[in-house]
Image 1: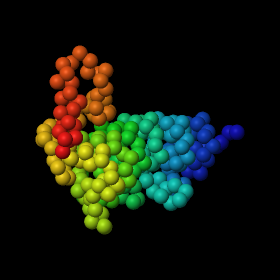
Image 2: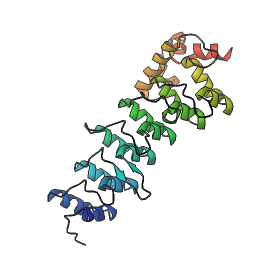
Image 3: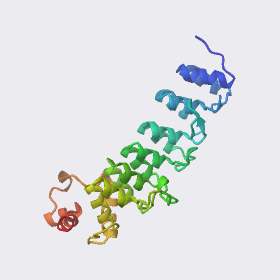
Image 4: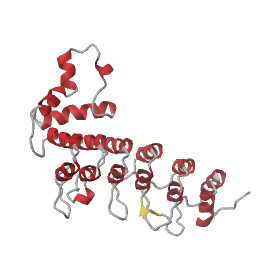
Length: 257
């Protein structure tokens, strides 16, 4: 069915019906690719419907990567927040390749893409955002602190590891007076408490200094996107050097405390 385009309703109809040809024709004829309909942008509408192919076309045609869009429940957020909430690494990469992207633009609730990716346990998106210099500053309130989020709800050890290596702030207290260490202790999260101790905060700080630990940890995150190298990556390296790189000297000290 041929669709004659020219208004916001036209391009939104093309988006909801996944009519790629109509979208291209609309833009080619000078139509506004960012035209809002009831607060929703075409890109936002496509993302909220998880119409990823349509979203890719809109991005390739120059859709605004920072414009707020309203969804069916009244939530207003920029595209990167939508992607981090719903989880799509490929679309996130397309957004982040755009030189005008605002990596830390918050949604209507004041949450950043990094916070949303942490909340939903998307370590791939957390890593991608950190690589693209997502800011960790200004997170003094517990409600904005991704480390507190990891401690409060658990099951985010790899994410916490990356955040700590990137220098994420910690120690924010919630309304009950509990900080990240208190929540990890209450939940009995020994692995996270060990990370906190090795990073240099909480009780029982160990040696080597946290700066050395962070430098080694950050190196491997930057190289491979993971906390530790696999054994096969270090074949042929002397054992003592291999143990040092894999932090075994620190873990040994930690286990004896």
